[in-house]
Structures are given as C-alpha cells and as structure tokens.
Amino acid sequence: MKSFLVKIQIFWAFSFFIIFHSSCANFGQPQGIGPTGLLYASYTLAVSERPLPKQPLKVGKSCLKRIGFFYVTGDASISAAASVGNIQEVFRIEKEATNYLSLYSTLCTVVGGI
Image (cartoon, rainbow, N blue to C red; front, side, top):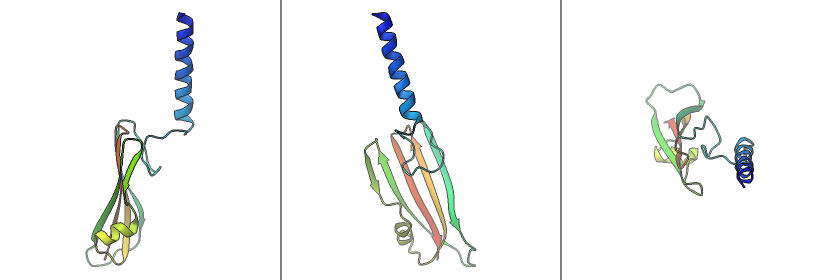
C-alpha cells in the first residue's frame, strides 16, 4: 500500500511539472509579456516612443484587472488611455503590469501625448 501511494505522489508531481513547464497553464501576467513571478511581479515596459514635442505631455492611463483565474475586466487599449488623458496625438506608450500571488494582476497602458 505504501509503494502505491508513493507511485501516486510521483505521478502527480510529474504531471504538475509537465503541465506548468510546457506552457499548458500560465498563472502569470494576462498579456504574456515581461517576467512573471509566482508570488509577486511589478514592471513597466516602454513599448513605443518618438521624438517628444517641446510642450509638456498629457498622460492617460487605462487598465484591465484579473481577479482569480477566471474573471478579467477593463480596457487596456491605447485608445482608451488616450481618451482618459484627452490626448489627440500619442508620443509615448508604456505597459505597466503587477501580479500578486498569481491571484490578482493588473495590466495598464500609459500613453503620453498632446
């Protein structure tokens, strides 16, 4: 009986390893860019930038949130971020992502423009 339980434990450990290391399951960031951490991750990526104008930039930010493994809400599009900041011409685009315990994560698009 003891050897049977050991075989079951080995089977589940091997199955867990295969599923999570073959990208069949990803509990990191919803967007699939940047590093993912099982416990915590937070980073900002500059996606696009062009020569900046002489006047100060307005900033707009739009986010999506993932709660648990099945519920995602929000709009992290460039157009949503531009409309929040009342931006007509975009000069800079950044992505900000945060992940807590793979149970709550956010992805935000930050745009700068005039």
